[in-house]
Length: 212
Image (cartoon, rainbow, N blue to C red; front, top):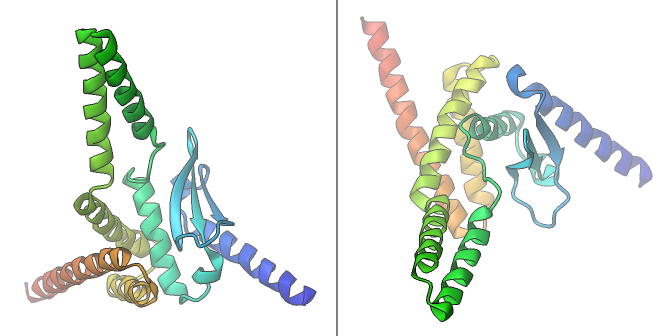
C-alpha cells in the first residue's frame, strides 16, 4: 500500500515537471504548475497567486485519465489564456459593488446629492465589470482564441498542425463525455464547433496553397 502511494506521488511529481517543460521559455520564471488539493476541482485552471506570478492548477487524478497529447493541448490552452491575459483577476468588483450600494443607502438618509451620485457611479461601473466578466459569449470567445493560440504553441513544440487539431478535438470530445454540468458541456461543445470550423479553413488554405 505504501509502495503504491509512493509510486503514485512520484508519477504526479514527474507529470508536473514534464508540464513545466512545456511552458514557453519566457513564461517559465513566473508561471507555476501545481496539483490542486481542493475537493471536486476543475480539471485545470489558472489563478494569480501574486503580483507577478500565475499558477496553473491541475486535478491530477482526472488528468491522468487523459491521453498524453490531450493533456498537452489542454495545458497549452491554459498557457494561451495567460499569454492573452484572460485569466480571472482579483474579484474587487464585488467589494466595490457592496461599498457603492452601502454608500448609496447611507446618502439617501443624509441627502448628500454629490456623494449619492458617486456611490451610484461606483455601483454602475462595478456591476458592468461583473457582467462583462461573467458574460457567456465573451467567455467562449476568449476560450476559442486560446484554443487557436494553443495550436500555435503545439506547432512550436514540434506538433504538425493536423495532429494539433486532432489532439485538441479529441480532448474536447472526452471532456464533453465526462462533464456532468450541462453549462460546462455547452462551453466545450462551442469550443469544439469553433475548432472544427478553424480546421476546415486551415485545410482549405493548405489545399489552395498546394494548387498554386
